[in-house]
Length: 401
Image (cartoon, rainbow, N blue to C red; front, top):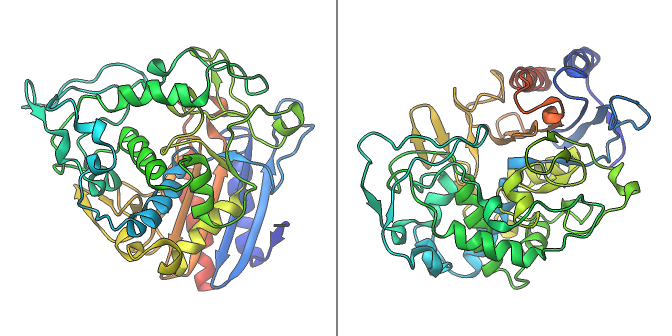
C-alpha cells in the first residue's frame, strides 16, 4: 500500500506533533495505518532505520517486530482451525498435546520476571500445592487464565544463542523447538487454572503448538500467514537474510547479555528467537498496514473466514479486577488503557513489548495500527504508553469530524 494521508488538517497536525515529540526520545521510527468508516485514511511513516547516520528513512513498507501483537495472528489461526476439527473451547489442551499432562500433577512455583529474569515468590497459600495439567483448556490459554507463569527462560533449554540473522544457525529450527517443547510441557504452574487472569507467554507458545498440530501443513509459520488471509509480504523471519533485506527492517534493542549484539533482522523476544524464531506469542514482522488489515477482518466479523467464535472472542470471557480478556484479545479497561480515553468501551486490541499495538473500535468503525521500535533505546525507556494514548485519542476525533 502506498502512502495515504487523508485526515482533516487539524487531526493530521496534532498526530504529527505527537509522533515528532516521541522521535529520538521514545523511539527512532514509527508507522501508523488507519481505516475509518470503510476507507483507508492514513498509511504513514516517520523516523529512521538508522537513527545515528540517518541514511535510511523508515517507509510505509518497512517491517517492524510485532512482539506480542503476534498473539492475535495465532488466535486467528487457532479459531479458524478449531471449528474445522470440531473442537470446543472448553476441551482440554491435552486432546491435541498429550505430552502436556503426561507428567501428572505438577508443582506450583513462582515463575520468573520476564524483564529482570529474577525468580518470583510463590503466591500466598500456594506453597506445596500441585496442579493437574489435564484441567487446562483451550479457553484458559486464550483468556490467560491457565495458571501458567507469565514467562520462563525457555530459550535456555533450546540451545546456544543463534548466530546473527545473516548467518546460518547450526542448530535446526526443528531441533530448537524439540528441546524447548520438552521444557514447556513440564513448566511448573503459578496458580490453579481458571482462578485469575495472569498474562502468559507460555500459554500462547503452547497454543501455537496446538495450531501447528491442527494445521494440514504442520508448520506454524505458514499457518498464521495463511489464516491471516492477506498475502505473504510479512511473517516470521526464519531464513538467513541478506544485508540488503536488513535495511527493510527496523532494529530493536542491543542485547548485551545473551546474543551480545544489536537485535536487527531477528526477533527481539529471547524465547521466540531461541526456539527457532517461530512461536505463538512473538516473532512476526510486518508493516502497519498489514496489521491494520488483520484488524479490519475482525472489525467486519466475517465468520466464514475465521469461524463462528469471532463474536465471542471480542466479548469479555475472563476478568480479574479491572483486567478484561476476550479470546486472545485485550478488552478496553483501566488496565488495558493504551487505546486512550476516546475509544469506545467495546474496543478491543493488543500491545507488543517492542512498542507496537492494534486497536479496533467497532462503534466508531475505526482500526488503528501503531508500530514503533521503542526498545531501541533500551527496554526500560518510558513514554510509549503516553504516546499510544495520545495517538488513539487524536484519531478517535475522526468520528466527530
